[in-house]
Length: 253
Image 1: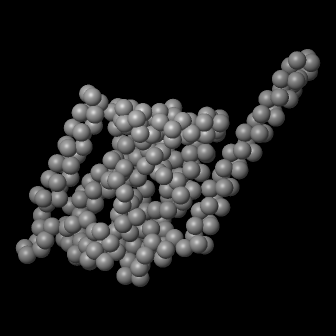
Image 2: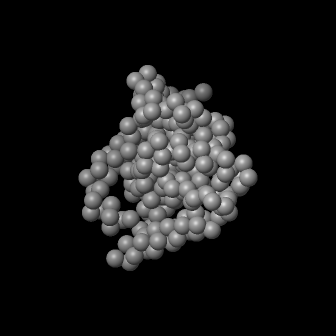
């Protein structure tokens, strides 16, 4: 019960912090406070208003965007697709990709730490079966864990929120977790941010992730996974040869 209370306290504190950043920032006369969009039309309106606003309040726009992004990542709230599009519209491709990749890694690390500190009762009650299935997969790839995590992040259908929450209970080191998020989500982030630079042309998610794009992400993920399997098999073969030589007194040069 104490852990649940701690999680609620962190959530309420973070919500108040986000509200403070949203409420007390500089606002041009006659303008309205930005609202998180529910669809692409709302996102285009927000992008247009923030784009003009960013010219005179660049640091505050960056602070507001970063705070909202970290809030959503930390508490595994859906919406990274819209946020990545908005990043492209506001900051351009290069700055946008660098920003969202960094925020992804930091937010996923916050989620990791929160889960490790407070989420054990929730995980035990609601995610026990899924955690056990993931544990079998992770333990099978323990020798090549980082590449396995990387391939999981590249894979377009991976439930990233589940990985962020469950990683502490799978004995995944935080450095592996954060770095695999930063690198592995780069293709996804790049596609979204690049689409955000031409937001007026985006009508649905399929405009960003068509069959060809999804096939490319699947191929990269599969190559990484196969490389992990091959590396593991080669390592096992080398160890067998080494053990055989030791047993038969063969001197290794």
